[in-house]
Image (cartoon, rainbow, N blue to C red; front, side, top):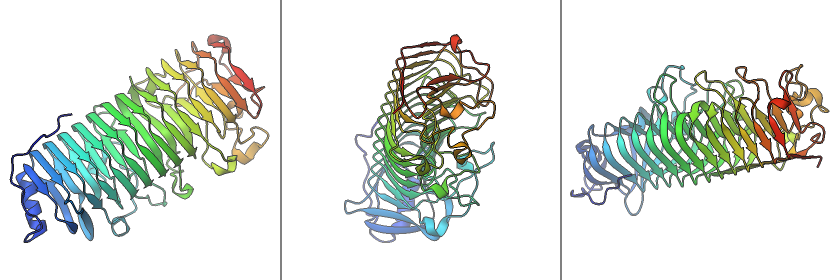
Length: 450
């Protein structure tokens, strides 16, 4: 991404006179170097970068700068960047005053993007190009820390996001709090960021089904701790790399998990139609949900990821399979995914749930599976999810007959996997009724009890 090497503009002393008035004037001008006043400045309405701004740098004072929302703040975000090019934000803090501004809010209707729905965000980037946000500390935001929509070349680096996100009318998370890239953001990166205490998703790409997919993105080297929904969700996207991210306590606090809305937590989740993408070398611990969900993922790579759960079944009320294939989106088929060299160590139920065709499931290590001890535990953990599929939740690798839509597992290559856990000597690799194991190539897998 193009970086601004120099800005030929006079720096205005925003600490002199009326700081907020001067700041708004400089942002409206839309070019040059704007240094925020030292200390904390409270605002009750959006700070807006002028339309068609170019070559603008906004940075904090050397001694530190904080922009904080007042209790009567009204606006889409503390800072709004719309129809601008080559804008840099760096080295300051945003405080969203969530305790005063949070209002119960459900998800938007399915035909409404978040940028038209969610208020009180930290930063809103809309219809913009070449935006860099680096070394910001964003906390206590009721909406999203950063929401970028319909933009190109968005680089978010070294951000720290803490204690953000809202709840719905039932007191569950409403998916907000982290970074959202939606409605066809192209050429984006989220790198070296830290997320702690985010109620919703940490990093999320999302678009309406009728909108362009997000594309050519990289989500790398980020850390996540205490996330209420997904650490990372790739939704409706193509050519996205998710690599070397780490996290712990995904799906906590338990009481804020959106059970009623189906928001089962996932370390790395997928939604919509996602292809030509890769999830590689990510590591998560204590996931109260799934490790990796491949709902809509096809023609891609899932390699060398690791999820470790050290507790018992009761420690994961929303525990699940380690890796799950799915096909909710009608525009995709579950096909041609390589799942290789991953480690699942501790899953409430099985290791990998497979549907679709032409997948390569190779050399994975699946340990301490079936913590729920299905089906011995019976109704306690809902082991008999489908009465006609008694082996579903107690299998190491389960060859399903479909998920949201019928798509039996066939023509898949399952080789060299090491599978261990309760009942795995008997239920190591199992096919659903009507699915022929012989329709798949299954070789050299090792199955054992602990």
